[in-house]
Length: 198
Image (cartoon, rainbow, N blue to C red):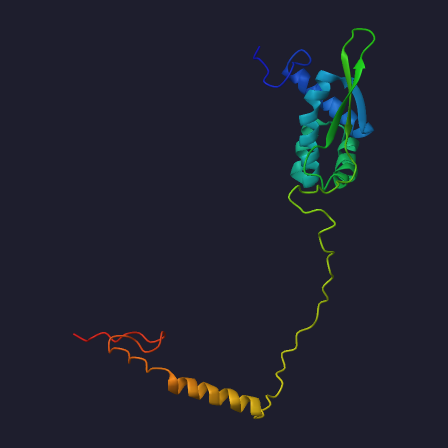
């Protein structure tokens, strides 16, 4: 028999193992929490999380994929209509395993596997500054933009404006004359140099 790749082998063969994990997943979604051996809980976790991911998709194909594993239609309906909306904001980690000690008869390690249905609390980034130095967010009001243009008023001549114009004229007279640009160079940056025709 081929060696299994994930964890201990459960049941007598691969088909028995799939059936066993399907029944455990069905009971988990029906009761939200089950107690089983630690090995079975660890093997059930990836199966259950994958089924919840399918349920979050919610389409017919995803429902049929879940029906391959879980044969009970009422449990599948409960998974898609009740459990999936509760974990819609969660990006994974839909199950929690808690070790509960050892079984009395054979001393097998026992664990409780349960669905995590609490709302997701946003994580605080370690790069953010402390809340005391962060200024509170100010709500911004939305305003309508008006595209009407107001009539332009002519500028009134003021004595200050006349003084500024006179001082600018004096500095232009005092400054040395700039050299005229060569014939090959453009006079303004927008103009392109003339290329000689051949």
